[in-house]
Amino acid sequence: EAGVAQSPRYKIIEKRQSVAFWCNPISGHATLYWYQQILGQGPKLLIQFQNNGVVDDSQLPKDRFSAERLKGVDSTLKIQPAKLEDSAVYLCASSLMWGVDTQYFGPGTRLTVL
Amino acid sequence: QKEVEQNSGPLSVPEGAIASLNCTYSDRGSQSFFWYRQYSGKSPELIMFIYSNGDKEDGRFTAQLNKASQYVSLLIRDSQPSDSATYLCALYNFNKFYFGSGTKLNVKP
Image 1 (cartoon, each protein chain N blue to C red):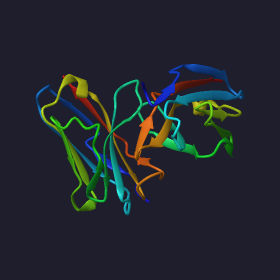
Image 2 (tube, helix red, strand yellow):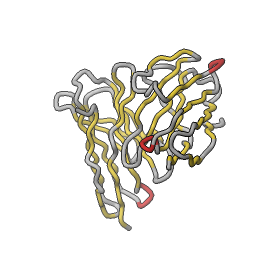
Image 3 (spheres, each protein chain N blue to C red):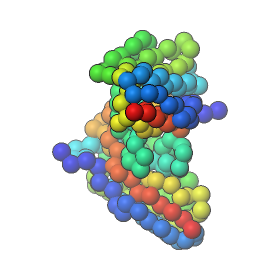
Image 4 (tube, helix red, strand yellow):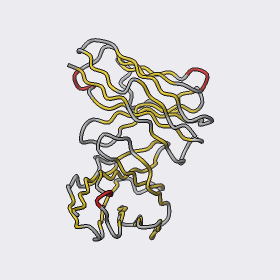
């Protein structure tokens, strides 16, 4: 079974630029999560989708971050414009069901904002 | 106040010893708890979860939950150098997962 795929793996941009990350969850997984993990900290949930609907985005900085999950499969997370403090690893995870279910994480995208 | 608190470590133990990792949480109503392992530069992977008070064993790993004291712990028996990683405690509450900052474990050969 293929795992969660993410791209790109690394991205370096300058502040005020835009960037987008892509995630393909495990086939059949209804729930998809985006996390931000700053160096030395634990993952922080940004947004979670159930199929193509948003379940929670309370910790997503909506003035600059946006995410979508078209057709309930792939998802993209965008930052526009980026700030220095956005430098982090962005992790995508998926689970078969919504709620208390095992999350499977992708390899992450390491973003550096200069 | 953070939902989940962990000592950042590092916790150093000799090979073959028992490593004890601890986590406290703030919301008494939290029901589901998870331990993840994260190797440097890699993504988290689930070790085990626990919902009920008491102990839950899986191979060399034992999770312990004490809801009255609001703490969760993970014991690793016969620690191996390959267990050297950051261990993240997480809980599920209010329809969201909350992660601690992790404890770094070093197992010395």
